[in-house]
Length: 368
Figure 1 (cartoon, rainbow, N blue to C red):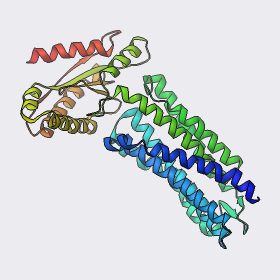
Figure 2 (figure 1 turned 45 degrees about the horizontal axis):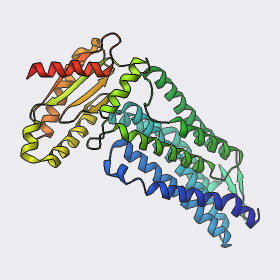
Figure 3 (figure 1 turned 60 degrees about the vertical axis):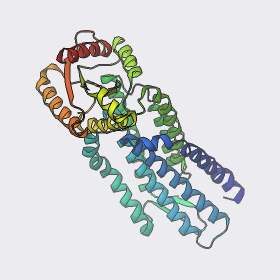
Figure 4 (figure 1 turned 90 degrees about the vertical axis):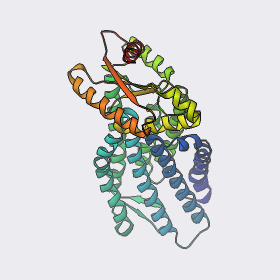
């Protein structure tokens, strides 16, 4: 490949992707400040993509400069990018799991199991640095693939297809991610993975992943309308949205729990709104740790949290135990300055989350 072709087919697209990533990175400040589990994973995905592009740019520049170690530079750079792609897929899988189930405990359970197949391929790439069992780099810097390259590409495709199937199954069961265009990521990343299989060494998965990442970011910006900036939980606009989905038969749930405190007004008068907001933020972190998988949690203002769950009447005792644990944890988090309570109700035939909330509010007022 001559210099013109190299610049046309590798350097220019790589620089465009790098500029795109830098532009996205300048807008990630608010996500960084929230420090939610999915936000941290999302930022890690950006770091991996930027590292991939940086490796490519450095390798291409060194190639254009006719350095005496073209083969070694290409070998190391390609290995690093392939390893980073595996790390990106790992983070992507954790990201989707958290977005669907909103459970840190689930992430802790799945992270090792999710990593095992990728780790096996990762080790093959490390070995490739010394044995060329996955791909070979000629003295001129050209890439020649080995049969195990197919395994590397196949693992990426399997993870993408697996994620797609997982999402389709969840969508059929629960209505899916309400405002989050996950498929908009899968399509460009799948195209990149298949392209890498057809044209090895072009870092097409990185380009596809970057396009998908940008679309996810746009989706998260749209989703901000439905999120409370203090706690990071959904807000009352989200309650209205899922009530519409439930009425249309696109969102299924079994019960609702309301956590609240009657002391919020006194606490705010004594400590101010900033301290109260900080306390609610800490309470939200506690809820994320304590709540089971699949809960949709909304902050309703003051110190009220509505949890829409799939726990049915058959598990009523589990709800009572959960309320006892969570209220104690929230009260402890508040340093006994606020005393949290909880009440619950099961969904009636055709009932939507909004009307269930009205029922829970009436129950809380009766307890005063």
